[in-house]
Length: 406
Ligand code: ASP
Ligand code: MG
Image (cartoon, rainbow, N blue to C red; front, side, top):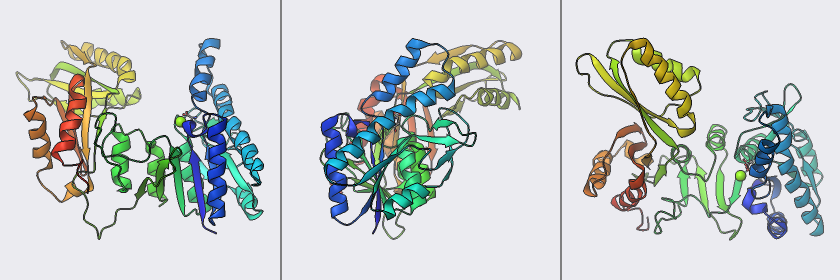
């Protein structure tokens, strides 16, 4: 029988009714002739609540203990889902990440999966039992319980699908798929029937919140077809799959925006070899994830360097900038938190010139100033003032004719 790994996110198992609906769906999938391995997230906002509780108890939260705490959320959902399945006469058994054989490194709170053994899941399947696996967790090579980072249940599901040779991995969530833009910003946004792994990676990296970046990377590397769909309507959603070279690719598939970054400018930096290198080396050594970079043309032997990084890392970035400033002489730091990155993503832009021009013209037509630009072969991103971000998304969605049916 073909195997489907079905992952249910926090909103899909948020209360008793939702859990029963999920059990119904699993039972139906089996009746239709597929084997199922279910992966569950913690119910609703459980993970956030547990994190808050930890903060209320102590300012010191050792990673090992935080992981032990957070993994309890997924245990609750997996046991309850098995009970709901039992009521429907479906044999099911719950497995923690450790019991499922998900072996990780020792990096608490953001562990990487090293190996998926999955023997117990295979045995359960062979016995006609539905394995229900706690998402987001594993066991380290030092035999401690670990978590895979926020949103990590997607990665659990994809890793299991790869290890068990599943035909597909279905990601159930509260939206009905991947859209040409966030429907809250663009009401005419359309659901995409299919999108390539490459495009999905760019979307996830530039503000599309439907799938975690790591799970898409994992799916691409292991050739696992993903189906993102709603557990509220159960209608078919968006397939994330390998690009079909025989098909013409859309020039632009989606427009995204991201307000999680801030911009730091360091002025009057001496324009000579080695200065930028030492700045970005120091940022890297302090785990600042630099994204966009611009260096101005120099005047009188000095230049301004601007870069963006996650807002939460700007405190560290400022300190690094100050230290560099002291070493190289007079320079000034300018922090701008009111910025947003707006991106257009599409595999077809590889072979179609003029996308950049269309993007810049559309923004210019409504008076939106572009502060920084970065590109990949299938993405163009512009940094704009935060207050103009939603308007930018709307004009780009229109300029690339994304609201008319494909
Ligand atoms: N419960 C975890 C979180 O909220 C993992 C997940 O939902 O994927 O981050
Ligand atoms: Mg979640």
